[in-house]
Amino acid sequence: MEKIIDGEKLNIPNHVAIIMDGNGRWAKKRLMPRNFGHKAGAKAIEKVCEDAHELGIKYLTVYAFSTENWKRSVEEVSGIMNILRDYLKTCIERATKNNMRIRIIGDRTALDADIVEKMDELERVTSVCDGLNFTIAINYGGRDELRRSFKKLLEDVNAGKVDKDITEETISCYLDTAGIPDPDLLIRTSGELRLSNYLIWQLAYAEFYFTDCLWPDFDMDELKKAVKYYNGRDRRYGGVK
Ligand code: IPE
Ligand code: IPE
Ligand code: MG
Image (tube, rainbow, N blue to C red; front, side, top):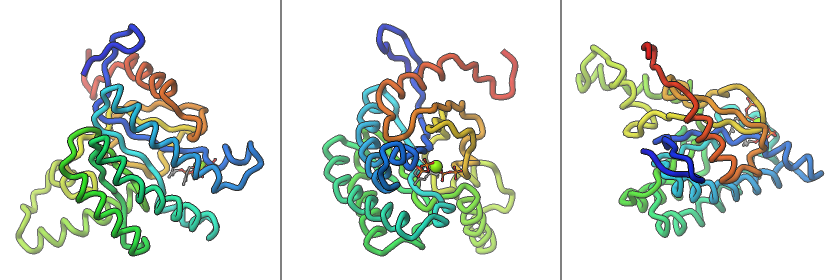
């Protein structure tokens, strides 16, 4: 989709994926505990959803907690889970008001029952919304997602439900992101240049944008910068132009 942004005609990516990194460093700079940064990070998500929708982005997928983040201190992990609880509570109201469809990806089995209940409710209630498709990755790891998908696929093949001549589409259908188009643009904040196990299958042909901006400071200006960078890329998909 093309849109005029600040007088410039821009091609808007259909799906933007974000690795929201740098909350800890943001807090440290302010001599505050890490969870202060996570709280500010959660606040930033709300605004970025509105900004993404305003720009015409249809799908936004954010990395909130990885399968590797359990390695952090008990204090930090429980702090993040409590921020998540609060976020999910207010999210229902915001999502229905803004017509946002929420999906949660990742392995729910390790999460507290009340959190899982809220996630299910949020997905159910917003399933009729057709504004921004907002997906949150919680206890998500790309390799773990593939492992879970292959396990399920194997069961279905053995049960004769699926043709054993597996296609790429079959695999995509078994991922947590089934039904969601692959990201066009990946943004990672805080200056790190790695994937950290995020959407490893889905990002195969995405454009990558890295910024030193710490996640709690990420705003509309930063999002526009990323979209402008995306517009300067030549997507060849292995072909020749
Ligand atoms: C990202 O910020 C949020 C999560 C991983 C939960 P970090 O907590 O990784 O922040 P830094 O990288 O330590 O600054
Ligand atoms: C990736 O950030 C995970 C999330 C943003 C949720 P990390 O801070 O956990 O990644 P590493 O440890 O720097 O690779
Ligand atoms: Mg980090």
